[in-house]
Amino acid sequence: MLFQSSMRKELARSFGATLVVLITIIMTIVLIRTLGQAARGSISPQDVLLIMAYSALGRLPIILTLSLFIAMVSTLSRMYKDSEMVVWFSSGRGLISFLGPLFRFAWPVLLVIALASLFVWPWSNEQTREMRQRYEQRGDLDRIAPGEFQESSNGSRVFFIDRSSEGRSGSNNIFISSTDKDKSAITTARAGRIEMLGESQMLILENGQRLENTLGNSALKISDFEEYGVRTGNSSTLGPSEQELSTIATRNLIKSPTLSNLGELAWRIGLAISAINFVVIALALAAVNPRAGRSSNLIFVVFTFVVYSNVMSIGQGWVSLGLVSFNGLLLMLHGGVFVFSMTWLLKRHLSWSLKDMLRKRSPQLTAEARAQP
Image (cartoon, rainbow, N blue to C red):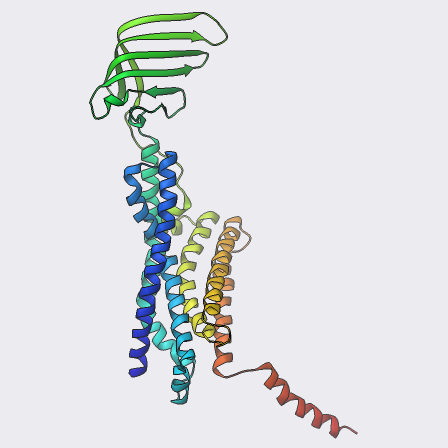
């Protein structure tokens, strides 16, 4: 009882601290990237915090897996360094007996990782995609910021309104430059207002002038008007678009087992299985060399995590291309890692050594050689 309670308390403290640090780092990176996208006009500035929240939820399986891995390795390494492991070994506890307390602590986290990778990951990506798509399909007038030149969605027109119009329902000092096939036109007006004609959005200009020119022709047509209507596009609606693999629900991937869908499904299931393997790897990996310091283990932990994650991504591509089957990838990659980590753990538990095995075998060979005439 003392053994399990001490392990849980130590793991909980280390896991909580590691999780806070990783979330802070990830959120900082996501914030910088999201602000850059907002500055380029890819997303709405008002949606920055919401997109950050969805991005954090999508990365939750990776954050939890890495936090759990680091927490277990650092806790066990600290126990080795402070000779606590020697005490437990002397009391009859073998290295494999630590698997029970580790999994009893980790199973809620493993369950959250599985649910997040299978359900939260596609949902958060779908929400982010819809927000981006909605912002890209907004009306031309919705794109205009007072005092700034703004291009329309199809790139055929450039709008400008006076900065003094900010916050008003109408606009003052309007400038529109448009190009349609072989004609170009520049329209200016003192004022304007927006009206809806069916599903079309119209900009009604008042007291202005329009200059039209045919490309390649020097003739210029100038006309003055009291009112002039400019169609600025239909009302903003989300049209059908090709759905990305990362936004498809897991049940839909299972219902439609194409190669690309199976590749995405293998990656999602692999996140949950890899988290289990990392628990075993942490126990087999944890050890302290007093001369190397504690940072050496952390570097190896990050290296192991990065290599495993990259191999999973490569395996996803192989399944999508049909080079490896879905079951074959899960068996070879995750099953192979599990067998390797358990073999490594048994080697440390039973103190297997190649040198000792050679020493035991050499006397036998010497005796056989002497027995031969």
